[in-house]
Length: 186
Image (cartoon, rainbow, N blue to C red):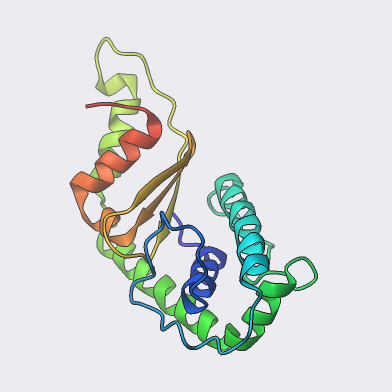
């Protein structure tokens, strides 16, 4: 389970500049005011760059192994993403502060739910010792948590699911998100 700072910053840039990208992902929660950017951005260029950057971030997140520190910057590289670089230069302190606050909140929530029954149930079902007569199931799933509105879940691949904090807080929604991502049915 992770809440990657680059993904939160990407969504912050999307919301603050009101970029029409990733419409399937709800706005950040708490909301970001869309007037902070106060910079002229080529919307088409910024959208294309954002889509490319987001795809890279999600792929990197899927490949990230637990306990390994990411060596990648949280911010879009201006030489590769000039439109996003200009936008980032205007909002960087606010974006980093917002991301750090959300990261603390997510860590607090995970500490409160340290014995998350949903995760233990999934692991128990994967082990044949607990399920007489059933074959073991391989479980390899990266869960990315984002501070967005509502019950949100998105399976990025068979090994990666993106969820909202609200989905994580709701045991039924979280169970459904994990099972759907793993291709398991109850």
